[in-house]
Length: 264
View 1 (tube, rainbow, N blue to C red):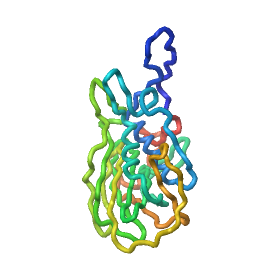
View 2: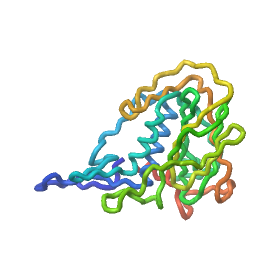
View 3: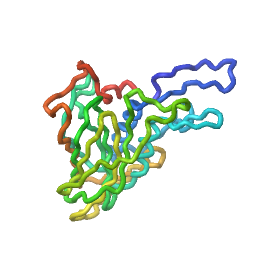
View 4: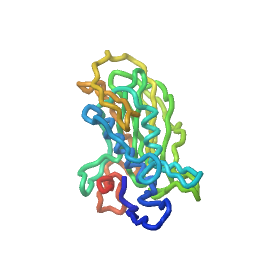
């Protein structure tokens, strides 16, 4: 993403810092949204690359011997640790808002990968100040335990990491996941991205032929998409504050992060 720093004048300077973006939590959530799309459309996305890895428009910045991990690094890491398996067709049931350019958009953005007896689930809560209680189910299987999970969030949408103030927007362990009736339940804070690996039980489906989707992020992702899209996962938002009946539009007092993605 490049949309803030357009400084290009390096004439007469030695190793000038040009076009270097400072990425915040908002940017990290948008990057997570791109990754969601790559997984959901793994049958047609052949390859997706990041142009710069270190410095300029990059998740890692250096200054002399110092190194800074920017906020957008963590969605890459959280997805890449859960890159193997078959991309699932999702249904998301929950509150939404009307975006100025994107139409009706769910507050919860999601993707999922079935990796044998494990289910990798990725969730983004786009709401500015509303927590969401989420229920995760998968067809013909039961969720029995959580193997691992991390959450990426921060004090506000504009929070950034810096060499001066340290790393504020970082991925941390997430243990607020409960198992009930073969489903996983968790509360996703506002402005956050969660990646989790769930262990499955119940009847295992027969292996279905997959279609290689090429490595996403220069080979770091290796999702396969089965056709037909079975099994499927259902990401159901149980409750939000305020109640489900309230939808928020761009004309309201606060606009969800996702409505800004098209401009980046």
